[in-house]
Image (cartoon, rainbow, N blue to C red; front, side):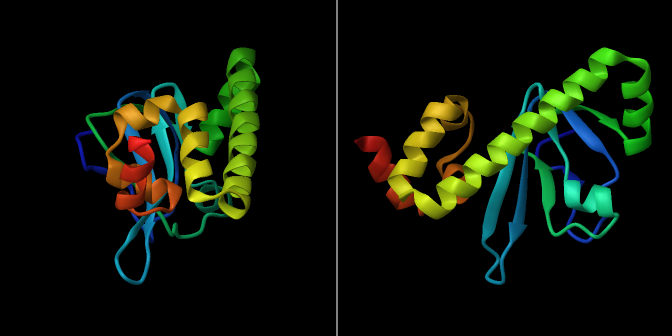
Length: 157
């Protein structure tokens, strides 16, 4: 994929589980004012999918876009089931990825409802230090739900 190319656009049905081999993707939605709220990043050796859209076969409310030149592998749910049944290592990889996704989602919800903006920033540095190096301040601010000016203040401390 080339930079800024869409993997999924709002209104489309997510049909693939995507594994990032190299590069980076982000999943975001636009609010009524046109502000991008980044929901997730996906970098090397990680998965990207709108699970709700894929599992329920409903229109996605998200966009998934390449942040930089990105190499991906994609599987449909059926292909993933077949591979998981025939290759135990694939089944284990999917199990571990799903487990990690559930943990990460729970941590993200906890951070959003119980941490201050500064605590969310420090938590991001502790858990995903590569994000700070890899993504722009605007993207990090959107992901954390804070203004870029606030993020800059935190970075200076």
